Image (cartoon, rainbow, N blue to C red; front, side, top):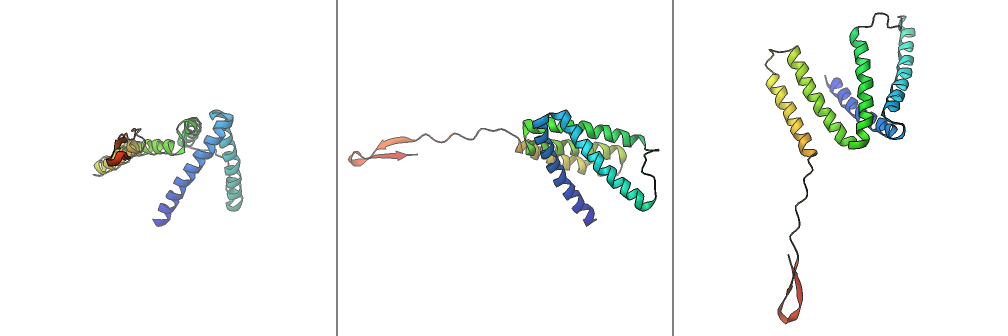
Length: 165
C-alpha cells in the first residue's frame, strides 16, 4: 500500500509539472496545438513502451479488442490537456491545479457514491471533498489587505515633530 501511495504522490507531482510545461507550450503555440504535441509525443513514447513489452512477452500490441472506455478515456484526455493548456496561462499553475483538484475530488465523490452507494462512507467522502473545496476557496479568495492606520505628525514639547501611529 505504501508503494501505491508513493506512486500517487509522484503522479501528483508529474501532473503539476505536465500542466506547467503544457501551459508554457500553450502560451507559445496555442492550446489546441499544445494538446496535439502533448498527445503526439505521448503516443510515440507509449508506442515504444507497448512495442517493447510486446516483444518481451510475445503478445500482440494492436488494440483489436479495446473496450469503449479506452476510446472514451483518450477523447477525455485530449479535451483535458487542451482545456488545461488554455486555462493555465490565464490562472497560473497553482490556481489551475487547485481548481482541477477540487473538481477531481467532487467527481471522485460522485463516482464513488454511484459505485458504492451503501458502504456508509459517502458522508466522510463528501466532508473530505468539502474541506478541500473550502481550502481552495480560501486560497483563491482575493481579499484586499487591511489599510494601514494613518500616520499623523504631532508637534511635541519644544516644537519637535514626532510621528504617532
